Image (cartoon, rainbow, N blue to C red; front, side, top):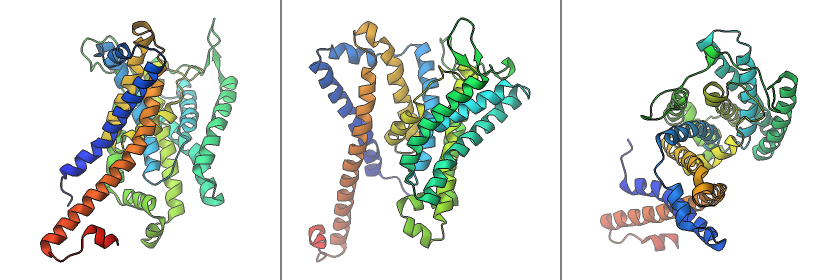
Length: 372
């Protein structure tokens, strides 16, 4: 049985903390270099959100969380599914198109739409899985290319089925019926707006991810394959099948990303549907170390920065895009920080083993001697 280790717990939070410090310093230097008011920028970003903004933060984090979990499933097996954004687009369009037909009553329509979106996302991801298993093409290359193809295909299909809004250039799918629109949850006191009802879906997905990855044979095989394909094959794991299953599962989860927006906000899919969510999920998954709880905190941070950036132009006279700098630096810094922390953990573990060996046998060689 595993026991709690204060050292490992501190090292686990050290990398994200170091990344945030680096992001703070680098962003401050950039602001100073261009003559922007550093203090006012950070006062605006770090100010306490109002109840309405709290709801916006939770709603944004809900969508980001689903995106990051979809990415994390692949990461746990060393599969870099960069195509989550394309899979999400295809799935959101398919789901909105299905829901808009109103073939089924409210709750049933919602559930079936979610299933349709997952199937669409999984099928789109299966293209990259097939190319990797059968043709040996890197999933990084294929999924990036499929993102562009997905954008074109969805735009073309949208023009075929679109309902043009009167007096606007915006084109959308047919709106979903009112019986399928989810009003939201009144969780934040004093807020006029509501939290997405499908926050519950994100919680369910996170719980399922934790259980399946950490507590089942499938999750063990997935993690084992990610760490060493040779060892996985030796233990009886069919690696090609695992690659296909994991990629399709990642795509199916990507299909859920647009569901809170579809049922809780937009009620259709159109040219204004939020984009870039799949790419944000990559950074959030890295920052959260692919752990369901860590991803939740990272998603809240990402959403917090997004919401707080809206007031930068008014209060500090700085473009809200400065938050992109912060998020980008966090993404780069966290990768470097994890490697530094990993090396520090290895050194500390070597020192601990050396002390234990010395306690058992004073004549045991030191760590340096063992290396030699």
